[in-house]
Image 1 (cartoon, rainbow, N blue to C red):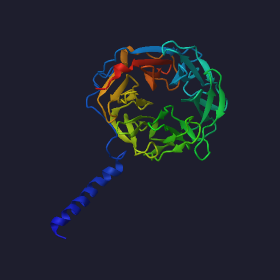
Image 2 (cartoon, rainbow, N blue to C red):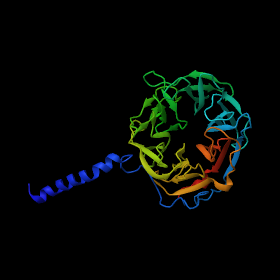
Image 3 (cartoon, helix red, strand yellow):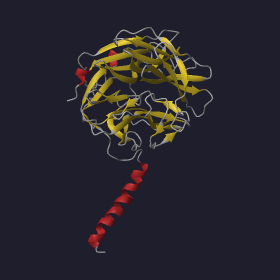
Image 4 (cartoon, rainbow, N blue to C red):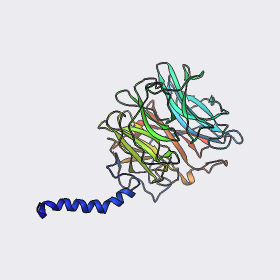
Length: 396
């Protein structure tokens, strides 16, 4: 072999020697991120608003106000529409997050602005913590999913149970949803259920042992059976908890599904994974340049196909402000709006409590009657819904 012919080989060996230590020490593999955000979309010099303006016609309504000595903690709000009403479930306790007295409450509205008094969807249990797991429906039946965390299960984790109702008022526990092989789902389900263009339901489980985020899917319209595990590899697991947590998803214009994750290891950037086969296999999650607050987020598609993501793009632990970021094709996010401003425009928490913090926490969204609705816990005390006319969210 001549020197010229061998040069590429020598260069390749030299590069491997040079780069290998860096690659081995990298916290996450280097690959093209599934989407990007326009540079300088967020102005970090203006932390209260990130330099964003509110969309025209935005409205806010407090669905439930935490009460002193009774329900000072309220969080984990999830929206869904059924039979002409918008439903909202959340978890509530006297003082602390994930306390033994936690119950799941719900309310409903015919117009998204005026809400019923809350009712108990699932009361506190003596042998397990019960938290919100989301909604689904088929035909004339509304399903409420519950996450059940047994007190004696170690490492900490849980399973899913489902309540069913034909009128949104009277409920029956119909048991645990099952995998295609007949075994019950073995994890905490994420509240974001999304239907793909081909009718498949896609979400994620935080599987036992512990909490290991894993994409799952089913072709059963009720979401009660037929679940399968999508092929996905977690980057790392610490103390039985995966780096990727609490995902949501949206669809790109080219047909790819994108699952977005909270980065539990604190990069304060959204992680994202791609699926080209309707949720059956997923790429390794990559860090994007979309800032985050290491918290739950909500993604989806508007009726015109516009991809969106609602989160706290602070790039720190601050869960303020609350914003929505938009993309016409799901690959380049180049527009964002303010939903709630932080700083002086957010009152401090009224009560003490375990894991209490300022901010607009754990948003979950739903499109209904020409509006995008976003529900969240304000300071983990009050349950608030913000709605925006779809016409005000046109991506450029």
